[in-house]
Length: 262
Image 1 (cartoon, helix red, strand yellow):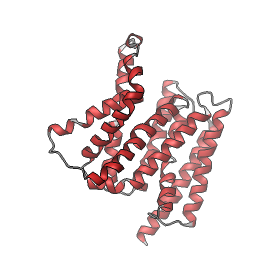
Image 2 (cartoon, helix red, strand yellow):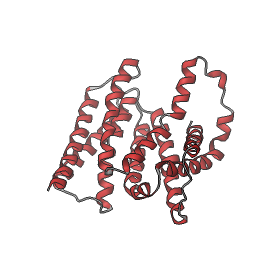
Image 3 (cartoon, helix red, strand yellow):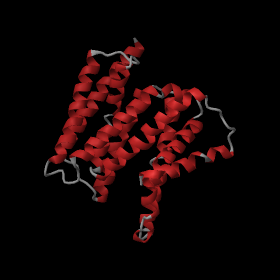
Image 4 (spheres, helix red, strand yellow):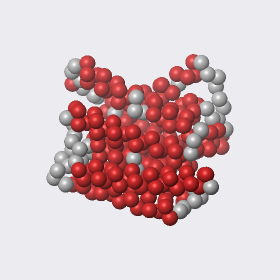
């Protein structure tokens, strides 16, 4: 699925060339673009797919809300943002809540989650945070469509030798019913190219911390859809841990607002 989704994303990334003029990428930037391709295309995608296969939709989406705190850590370490006491308290709340979500996956009540699945989701969030902070200037330098075309083409080329055999040997007859074909098409097309297209557009206009806030829509949708479809159920401890993460991010965002108004 990782290989196939990257190949599809690479194909989609070339469609804008039908109406856009070509944009030249400077030779000095190709190394950074290759690193971005490995991070966002190969590593992040692989960890996310592996993590989702071994955790529940609710736990996975709650862990994804850790991204704003991870962005803050990377930004402070890199000197992009100042560290304050309020941010420190927010980090403690958020990281404690996220750690609790990961560790409770081994609890007998959380039958849909596994420890390593949650760990992979955390690692995926770390990679996302690193990209949002360190590649913001690169995103601002080129058209988003140009950048994604290079990133996904490189990612697909890297993954093809690894996943090509699995792709061509898939038993397509096992996909019985139009709903399975639609589900497969959704996974191959929607979660890869479209979110990254929107993410990179947003990074051109707002700070990474602001962009990452909107991950808080994920657990709300995940809870509603998972419970409605019978895929998972909301546990009281999970809700409490999620509130801890939300509180942590609220403290961090509030600190940022005070700095900007000051």
